[in-house]
Amino acid sequence: MAVLCCATSAYPTHTLRVTSSKVSVCSSSRVSVPQLHHSDSPFVPEVNKAVDSLSKEFREVDNLVARNTARVLRAFQRVKVGSHHFGGSTGYGHEEAGGREALDQAFAEIVGAESAIVRSQFFSGTHAITCALFAFLRPGDELLAIAGAPYDTLEEVIGKRDSGGLGSLKDFGVEYREVPLAEDGGLDWDALKTSIRPHTKCALIQRSCGYSWRRSLSVTEIGRAINIIKTQNPGCMVMVDNCYGEFVDDIEPPMVGADLIAGSLIKNPGGTIAPCGGYVAGRKRWVEAAASRLSAPGLGVDCGSTPGDIMRTLFQGLFLSPQMVGEAIKGSFLIAEVMAAKGYKVQPLCRIKRHDTVQAVQLGNRERLLSFCEAVQRSSPVSSFIRPVAGATAGYASEVIFADGTFIDGSTSELSCDGPLREPFSVFCQGGTHWTQWGLVLGEVLKSL
Image (cartoon, rainbow, N blue to C red):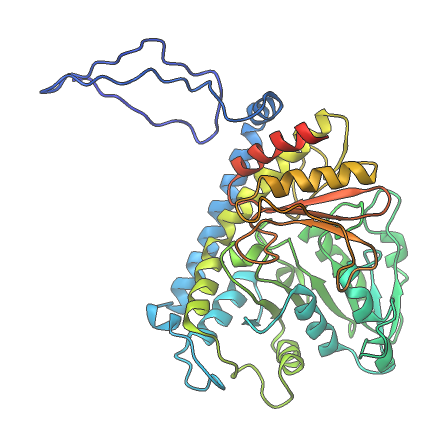
């Protein structure tokens, strides 16, 4: 008996070729199979070469995906997620059928937190982070950013950039300081050991690089920083901006002592299908305080309606998240490998362990940054016919260009890139529902540069 196997490896190579033009299979009838040319790759040679060199890294990512999927699956099973949880609610949300509570419980278990609030009413990651900061801070307190300057959209929240009296932390009498990064782009451990003051109420740790040319932080590094902070002042709360970091590691910041984390559902934990929302997770007392900032004191977490079609995508997106994050990580490896081979500086470097889903490439001038983003937009499934134009964007100090031909507006986890039009003109790439999407996009990028 002869068997024809058409399966191929999950880690593509480009050398397999069926040499005969016809394959015969013993059966009641004779079957002819056309000649297969597995070496006929849809990728440009530079991408083919990079893919061939990344088999080890791709396998490691698949193992990470499996471990994180198992963690999510256990949480869903323990909470007993059922189809009745997808029903949603209207109005005040008082007649909600348990989905809100089940989602909060599952999310809290997944990230190792006491409690969580996962809501469609969070506009963005910045909104969720703001609610978390206002949960901790009161007039006369100090906020200390220990990983250098925070992301641009938090500058007006903090009062580092004038908010026009609209209610920044500075407007409410909260002081602010920063611990600059070390020369190697990591945390300045020596400075951190003496940075906490008696009235430092909250230390802010930004896990991802944001728009800075620096290394993103591992959860292990975050845990070390928390120990240093708590040793100086046990009453200093630690808030982690977790955007772009979810499911990139086996553990999350609450597992190493973070009091609160916050992020967006149209990034990693939404699995590319959550249409909106964000989350805050951590110690129960502070989650409730953040929920009161989202809604109002006294309302807590047991209110707020979510339509059923959205509630289902929040559950399903969370379940898909480890897989989608894995594809984004593979895409980041591919971008780094291809662009570094062309002589561009990349951060993180090629083939090193990732701590977020962002891949930065230093392009050196305005024209190349614009060309890169235009090429990504042309390669997108939505609005490929639109040419992105740099301009002023709410929350950003500099002109920014965005390429995000996504099904969900602003869903960087689908596939996107953006960058501020300032030195050193770096582009920040994120997402990708499958690594092959970046493989195709890079072909267009290379033609444009």
